[in-house]
Image (cartoon, rainbow, N blue to C red; front, side):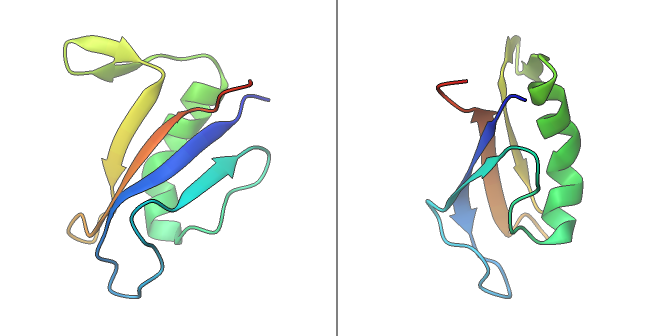
Length: 84
């Protein structure tokens, strides 16, 4: 299974769960993310793990950027992990 690297790019979580620069690797199990953020990013992760390229402006990339549904308090970048 392809691995996806997640990086928190901005963090203003009302529960202080994340800090900018935190990284997680998604393999078989979901990382320790809140379920609201996970529900937003899971479709992108699934697509990348299955070989998709995602829309990125006028181009396509094996990466995505997203934010939590709570006012974009946490922003995250996902990409295929190296060595995959």
